[in-house]
Figure (cartoon, helix red, strand yellow):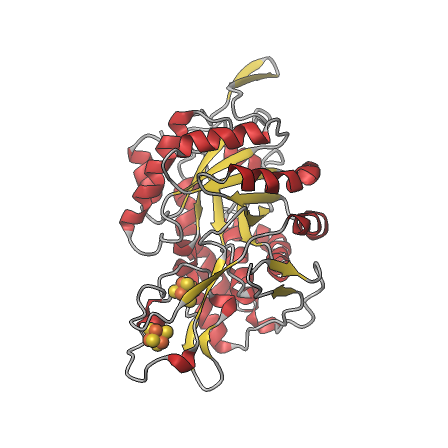
Length: 418
Ligand code: SF4
Ligand code: SF4
């Protein structure tokens, strides 16, 4: 490990790994344990919901990872530094910012409950204590909605208000913000950006996530003009096929295709894939020559290029080349695939212990506009059953880190390949 390394180095060198816990996912034990396992495996960024309880659960995991980091390295895992903590916001309706809902009493008795089967997080339950969608577990993938034969399931969306930005940045200590937007929302984006701007100096990174669409390149160019000048690194997240990476190998193609389009546009900033990424993504990128195969592996000459457009700089009389050229990807973010990969192990843990920590802060107000409404920022989580945390079971912990490493190392092992 060298002291010059940071998540920024990973971005510059094209092996940035981001774990997406989910902009709507609020299952605190899973978020905490996923964060811990992927951090110890070498993740560079953890992306969570803009929910104070969720942020706090992730921060606890990052603190724990610092304590276990040396052990992880001794076991050969990729932990190098504390990853950046990112939260996601939206400038309008977006599938990442919604929850499914239905009234279970209206379900026909004869229904075979395909909703329950299709849900990837077990968020739909039919039991004497709870029937319907378990809010914390739903991350808005929408798979249950079209499958209901009685058409009972609908989505509740929510959009962030500008006045929610300040407490989020100032009181939670997050490192990065990601803005989810869609083609045609220049005005909504501008409004959200205006409310973020006063707090930019507190951030290490800004990301803009956008799915494909007619005129996407022109749209992102407009956003680029809106945010210029920007004094921190910027990521364009190519959200190919949102929340689909666990469905099958082919989902990665949409993300790769959008990534190629954005790379060709040569926008100022790093390009990182998401939306459909999975076990096949790195192999696909490699086959297309979109991953940078070499890095400058010298602790002194491990240069920082604050501006991704900068191709060279001189240190110690040597001219160094930025390895993240504008035609290569800077990294990959994994969401549903990364979560599903670890879910059998985390389910084992949860089945052994009562896992639910007490929630203290977040209230989603189900108003007609369904806006997120944090009532209080970063109050402590009062009680936490200690045995629900992954590190309480070292065997499961290192199994989970091993599993996470199978994904993280694909990207990291590009280092040195040539
Ligand atoms: S299928 Fe998706 S949208 Fe429906 S309840 Fe499950 S996580 Fe939520
Ligand atoms: S598929 Fe529709 S009708 Fe059937 S159990 Fe689920 S919500 Fe109820």
